[in-house]
Image (cartoon, rainbow, N blue to C red):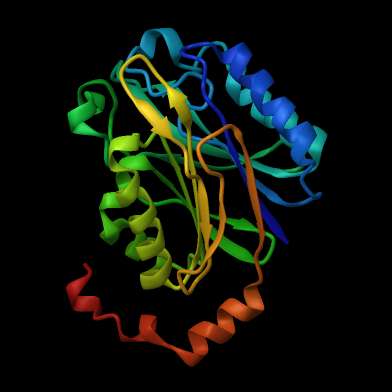
Length: 258
């Protein structure tokens, strides 16, 4: 089976234009039926702190777009959205829709980015989220979560063998982005797909570099700096063979990871 990552230069706070960008890229990528397609963090708006202007809790524009697109293309589609919490703050979420257009998973970012003002405008999630995709047990994370390996370890201990990370990661720290994605793959012996935005927002430049790593840390795909997509074949049998030959996860000390 294949996984795909779509890297776009999100138009600031303009859902319609960003939905159109995704549709155009899907037309070009033509993902295989049943594959997993991953979009970036807040792909429909950019990484905005203006929750009142971009949230999807009333209009459901982006959630409807994701559901309809998943059904039309016959794929599992994961994308970043903003909803409104009961507290009035935002929720930075990733949602997954099945080829039938049904929601199969919803994850709220566990680590809001304090330096970017996110912690003042968005609530933190409560736990990791796992979902089934084909034979894989997948898990979702968002951007700043990548700096907290204990979150990924928790998901791996619950069975995750495919990790998705969606982001608005700035160019100034792109080396960290690539190094941490690779590290999460190696230490959890899991496939990792990281999907970042590219281009400028009102404050920062984002160099993209959406990437896919295999369970040994081998780079399978790199999107570079422009709009486009990445794809890679993933194979559960080879992953399981690798874990069996190198059973590092079996040596995790449970008393040190609680």
